[in-house]
Amino acid sequence: QQYLRASHASPVTGAHLPFTHLVENNQLRSVIDCWRRDATLGPESGIEEELKCPITMSPMRDPVLTCDGHSYEREAIVRWLRRHGSSPKSNLHLPSKALVTNLNLSKIAAAFRAAE
Image 1 (cartoon, helix red, strand yellow):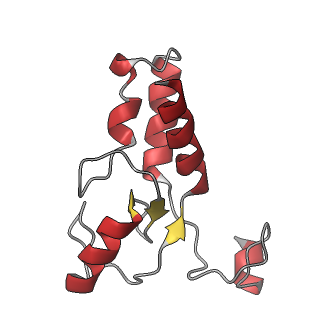
Image 2 (cartoon, rainbow, N blue to C red; image 1 turned 90 degrees about the horizontal axis):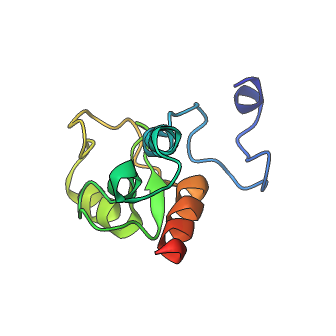
Image 3 (cartoon, rainbow, N blue to C red; image 1 turned 60 degrees about the horizontal axis):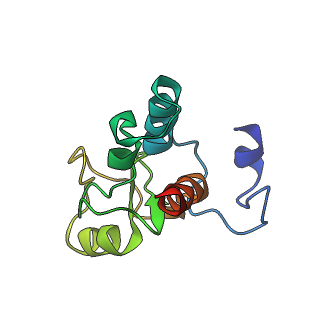
């Protein structure tokens, strides 16, 4: 948090950050919770559902994070944000329409697809 107050660049890549407050990564947290309950990653683990876009209900291939901590397929949320200023999950106003690639969720989704 202190780093973000002083800089508007990623400490990893140096790229400009569209917003500089910490955001919960809700789907990643849910995936980790599912894995803790069932490390087999089978259909009953619930992980497959967490890797689906809440807008399209299809598996995410390019997940992005909004400022409210929810992840969506990039193309779906871009279309949504063109018409709305609110979160598709909570319907609350989004103070920023900036999107950040959800690298961790993307890697988990790719690994899950490869294991199928």
